[in-house]
Length: 401
Ligand code: NDP
Image 1 (cartoon, helix red, strand yellow):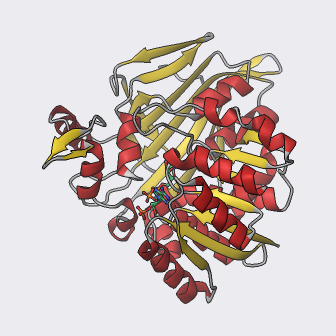
Image 2: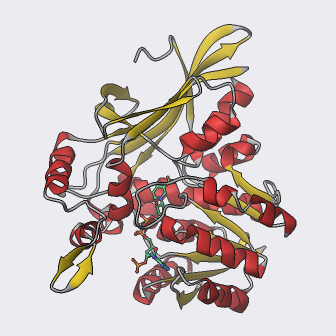
């Protein structure tokens, strides 16, 4: 069917390219472009060995719009899949507009010098994409991504009105490291050290980072402490489902992880304010990223499961009903299939599915969109087919917290 250009050669990209290579009838020509060519070469070699599939590779600094435009001109893809970092989103979208090509990503734009993510800048490009008959799909990972699709799915099939939304993200895996993040350490630490924020009755309520803790019994994982955080899909879900009265996001962290994080924060190593080091300006968090384990190397030794899902209470035929839709993903099974841990897997698979639904026109619509704005059924079907089946249960009562 189609030619695709993937930008970024990290953990998520590696999974997405494995899954695309498994569907060689749909993804006829894959080009991988990233900052460090050696990381592209590693993925290229794996793909050749596993699937006897040749992919093109290129070195690219995607902060540079004209460099990205040149690569697009050279390979003429129908879709650019941005699996680099959120800092590159706007420049890659601009290159797509310059060269008339569709766009997909898994994380919303955030400026380098401020740990603040918002859809505003990307949504502002909606008209430009529409005028050019192009599509931009934002946040096609798990959360954001699948969690948005779960919300639309519950609304479509189980509830007439959705009132209380809780997204619960649990990584119950163990990688045997003292301290490591599940995905890019810089982006991850920026996210979790932000103030918590949730939506209630038309207002956003903020609190200190990771200050509200609840124990929850996750299916197939067990009891874990989860913490209230702000997460990007809350912004689009609240906008697209006007019946929501409350929307919250929770993520699990172990005590050891939080102890390390506290120490790193207290000594200033998570800061994004530049400091002088040997006459150079360095950003402590960027330095810290270099000394922490690279998440894409964790797969080999990670055991256990992730459980990510959405609990929604609302009305069905005027009666209160609570639905929990979730996926459980096994780290070791992911490694067997694509040599990655489950956090990269649960993001890379939806990135491939979003791409597929754009390319085969099932979801194609000019403009810039979030996933809940489409019919969820084809995405849910594809998740079942490509490794991330969901389960749905009805809870006896709404959440008590
Ligand atoms: P990694 O750090 O493993 O990979 C990022 C890749 O992007 C690296 O190959 C890096 O290059 C490359 N890159 C960085 N800057 C540039 C640039 N200027 N030009 C070209 N390439 C560049 O990150 P992950 O794979 O863990 O995460 C990828 C994305 O997925 C992130 O945006 C993250 O926020 C998002 N994500 C989304 C999730 C979801 O559920 N929605 C969950 C997890 C992640 P190099 O090889 O040189 O480092």
